[in-house]
Image (cartoon, rainbow, N blue to C red; front, side, top):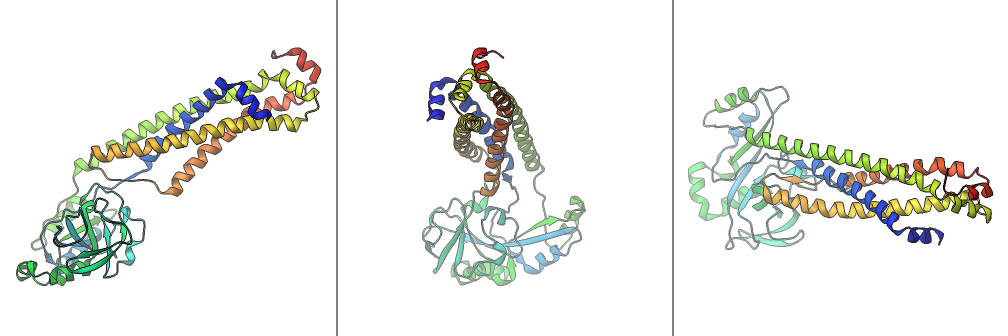
Amino acid sequence: MLIAHSLKMRKVLTASVVLAVAVGVMALFVLWLPFAAVALLFTGAPAPVYFPVSTAEAIREVDGVGRATTQFFSQTLNESCCSTTGATRLIGVDFARDWTVQPFSGRDLSVGLADDEVILGADVGGDVGDRLSLLGRTFTIVEKLEPSGADIDDSLLLAVDTARSLSEENLGLSYLWDKYGAPGDLVSCVLADLDGTADASVVLNRINALDGVYAFQRSGVVEASQKQLETVFLILLGAGVLMLASTLVQLFARFYSCVWERKSELALYRAMGASKGQLRALIGGEVAAIVGAGLVLGLACGAGLYVVLMDLLQDGSAFPFISPDPGETGALAAVLAATFALLALAAIAAPLAQIGRLDPSLAMQQGDID
């Protein structure tokens, strides 16, 4: 009751400190999460092109290629072929070797998909567990990917062999197989990554030297834009840290002085029989309530502002973002809570220790002047 009464009697001071804590927490929370978000800009563009699997194997063997995965582009989809909405492409993925789709998934894709399972891109209609009809077969949706800002957002992803068999069964595509061969022996693209020591231009020349192969490198403009974006977030994060440091200093001074300013009040409690522990519990409870309210308000506002910020980034650019996992977000919230708790404890520890040693009558005579 005393804690609640004290906070109520100091409404302006309480509100100002709560707001200061909330603003500091919100600023750091909002700025850290976009900086921690992963930007991935490596993807292939589906097109009706095919070449032999043997070519993909030859690319894997090129000196300087660290890893390579393949995809099979089946066809463009419409309402007449499937029961889902918003999809434009059907892609078969070699999940055992893939690393380009995995970052947008919450499950281990390396184990592959069953023949009747499908993964939806972020912009494709449907929910996990739904059944959908696709080119005469029925599939179960096992996952919906996070937004990538790339072509897979508008795609349905199958195991590569499943996509091949669907295409082979589609009589409307038989002209392609007459031209290129059986789908089981074909791929549409190879996505390759260099090993740590390879020179990109040299490896590209080696790949292009293969018969009928043309390789191109991820755009340098994209890489430069990604670095610029990371730099901007780093600068903003630094500004947020400085603002938080300033807030912490002010809060320390506020908590430190609030004990001395109330010497006569605390001395009166001592004269009425309150123990040192009860005084510490009173001040500690008030500080805990103020800091706790500021943390809750700051984290709530920060989370809401973060969602708005990420939506603006997604709508305003083609850069894909993946939010940090809940564990990382929770760790950040815990660090912020611990920081403010330790600050408050350090601020009131020394004044309380000294007040506990004061004579009550002398403290009341001195009033609020040290």
